[in-house]
Image (cartoon, rainbow, N blue to C red; front, top):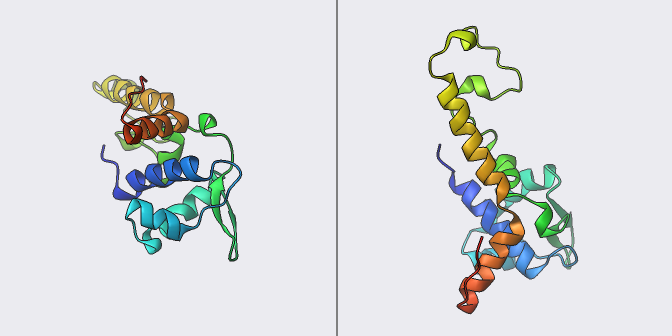
Amino acid sequence: MKVSTKGRYALRLMVDLGVHGGEENYISLKDISSRQNISIKYLEQIVTPLHRAGLVRSVRGAQGGYRLSRAPEKYTAGEILRAIEGSFAPIACLESEVNECERYQYCPTVGFWEGMYKVISDYMDSVTLKQLIDEHLASVQGGCVER
């Protein structure tokens, strides 16, 4: 499993929105681009699936931009990453709810892959956007936050 640059930048974008805008203030991609050192064109490619997934809201115009659609503690890192990356299933037959692999019943390794998938999913879904924001703020301020 490898998280793409888009996935990594999506988490940074969401942390930036949480720190600078939250649920109230709209933040321009220009401002995010400047702070995160990510091109506006690349941010546009990232924010589109986040918007489609309902994770961010947008407003057009001079005072427009993006903001979180809900409180940071209501997001998980897994939810954000899946909006960008899709499934994190380590093998194709685990990508759908019902495993349709004809060898599923007899596969000697499927238990291993299911276990790996569960560990990855459980961890990604245990970390909230609020935790990422708090860790970022603590590192900027020289403090420490326990997870």
